[in-house]
Length: 503
Ligand code: AMP
Image (cartoon, rainbow, N blue to C red; front, side, top):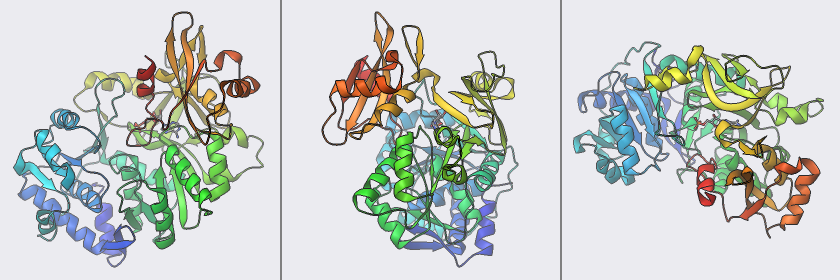
């Protein structure tokens, strides 16, 4: 089955419904979107000679044509290679060479970078250009009939360790992930609107399928990204907004709404994930916006789908384990199994920390052209996530950190997250990231990078806060204040960059 059959179906069932909006303005109905995508797919096949199974890159910030490009690649049976638009031309060149993508669909401002990366001019198509528009109104092709195991999406990992690897997601993976949205995240109604404030080249872009399936609206903000004031006004104008947001985005959105005396009106669901959500931030978010939140934990290798913490669990404030639960990432999605294992892949007892392993319908087929890494990561038939966590008796998974972020000081393991949670309790600490610094005596010492809300807090006050909550050896040895934490395009804090500053 081809995942674009969801669009074909929606175009037939709901041709008049608004499908694609730019800001609050409707660009295309489902009928129009279906016809444009089928015509763009024909253009890829006929004018660019794209064959089924061939990789086609999209190199663009969020834009309405992004959704068209993604669907058109699916429609003709090719493989979507979404490239982070913030990548340098050299990094793009690596992705193109590794994936073998010959054809690049780029936004106008990235045209030159795509050429610099080695794209042949006749293999470059510029999104929303006059040529694109002509192609979109051309003759349609019939939907390519894909097999469930055909690769549909080749997602390059951010490459914080070594070269980025291409995660092969099959048609079956994408369909299972879409169904998992309905079983464990949220239902979607026809008048809902998925707003793409986080990059469509990443997880946010994968939430299009569930919304196409229901014939709901897709909203691309005019800014092309995340702007809290713009989102607040879209919530008023468009209404029923759902979005995927990194925890750092939730933090900024909530701060804006609070500052401007607004609440959660106009928002339906905010799915957060992709990095740790601190309990203090979550409490604020629930207080300001209400029960609008669902958490997911996933990774490129099992996209958006490992565990979920439901709206119901977040709302059950009277539950005796509520405080622990909201600090967890929830329970396994219905379509996957989750275990916590030791270094020999043996199950660990409840409560013990180990590596999180996953098996199920959403787990990738492997890494593109990289049998060694595939074998290592999928050994024994289980995805080895590299994340450290523990399960409780009801199956709630609490993540600590990625194994590489763990600090070992004087022989003791320190999980940065635990220290970060405490520092955030201070009302003048707005953001924090804790990393290890090499030290001759201790192996590593704990260093906290902080962003102040107002005046920075004296070290002694932060020391006292830590000593009141956590063991003495976990207390940071140095506090460093920054105007902002370095983050990647997906809003994740770049701990590697922080480590480099002190290294
Ligand atoms: P990526 O493959 O770039 O999406 O990154 C996936 C990684 O982000 C995971 O392996 C986790 O380390 C982290 N992550 C994803 N979701 C969560 C979450 N809800 N809480 C904490 N960390 C998360």
